[in-house]
Image (cartoon, rainbow, N blue to C red; front, side):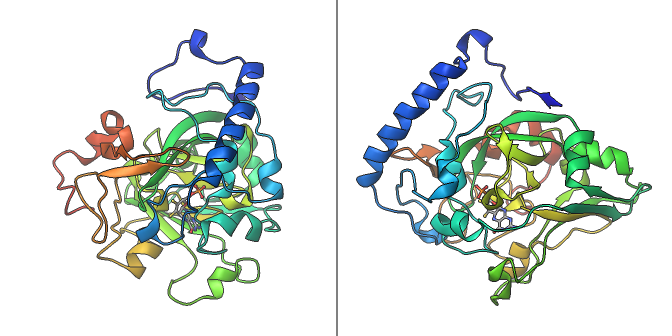
Length: 328
Ligand code: MTE
């Protein structure tokens, strides 16, 4: 069942663009983006080069898919949704490649069905969920969130999914459980990046239990009214909008309730650069670049980065009294 539910400030229905106007506006924007794209430099894959301007990338077949219906054209701050083509063609998915512009191509044949997610650890009701169970058992909602990458680029994405808290409620964590640990599929034959050294595969992420239970944290199964494509983490991924994008782990096969702070792939690779919390914070620079501003994909110029990525009102209470520099 599809529930259209927005978080944050509600946009009056009078301001929602009717679908036919929305689509013709998209066609117009596509044309404009293609024009400006030719004048822009391509983005490079390294974080150091992340603030190079870019427009729409042409990633071949996947980018030709038309997006489905969404309820509005902006987020609650009034910022336009990113173009569907950008969302599916500019990606971080190191298991395929570190080149954002070719992830979609590399991931084209990734098998996402059948797919199961094991949910266990310190819970009363452990279980193995088929992806279809997750799609039908939990009402799928639209959530329009800003995604702020630690590399200082961002997008506004209309996700489809359901609150992680609903799944957690069903498995009933034991009182001793303090954290949730997530794992991406490990399959080096399909994910050639996992054959490369330098990282401890599979990709692992973690949240404190109270963070995981916050209503803004969702498991996404789609975007722009369509099922997720492999490059975006099909068939199911985490989305935690107040944290840097690397916390939003893709293609999840395992969710475990534990009584320790999990070590993520990035903490393991570079503990002085990537902390467990990774809350978006313009006041705490990455050791190698500032986090004060960001480039919204598809825009020229930079915008100020918002504390907790603009979700401060909703999530600051989770960290009351904590030192956000120490807990970076
Ligand atoms: N999950 C896995 N398994 N592997 C990855 O490389 N990259 C992360 C995150 N989840 C990543 C991942 C990073 S750095 C970002 S910014 C987001 O996915 C990007 O999501 P998107 O490609 O859908 O925009």
